[in-house]
Length: 213
Image 1: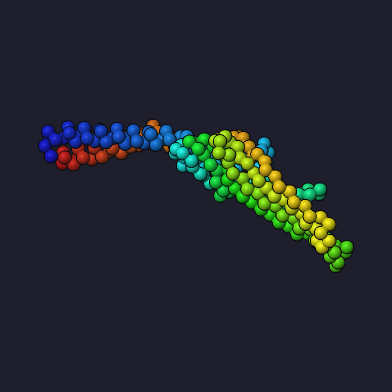
Image 2: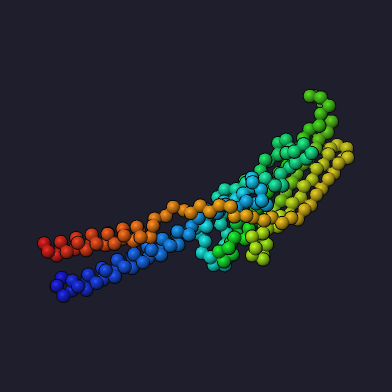
């Protein structure tokens, strides 16, 4: 390579270094916004969901899976509290959360449970059964506000006399409160850019050494 060509090569390498630095810096800015968001559900201290927003583009309607979450509402309860054998809560992990234009809109999820209890006069005598069941489904409102609607159905049937045959249908609002934002640990843009510059500089020095040999 002639000495006339070397300035051109140096200019090209410098340009490449700047391009790499700019690209890494931009990635660092985007990643710096990535976080795990925690929302409570209906103001409960127990019901919550967590979702990582690092894959969001902020364009149109997007769905992201819940990484962790519990829902204590809509479990089977009677006058004694939680029905024996019923779920204590519903696991929300894997269900989707909807975002629109980068804004949180709400949960899309379904759940159900069922328990049959024996009624006994004694340890060996069953005189009847009580059957409990519940089903629910949640979907975001189309308005774009962080609010959902839940429809749920609960029934209790007493066997064998059919003295009790109760069915309850409800439509309720579900609201969410952002209570935590945990940023993802990512490399600082300047650190990543400095690494790129160092690597490019080493490459240039190796090239000069080879030309001098």
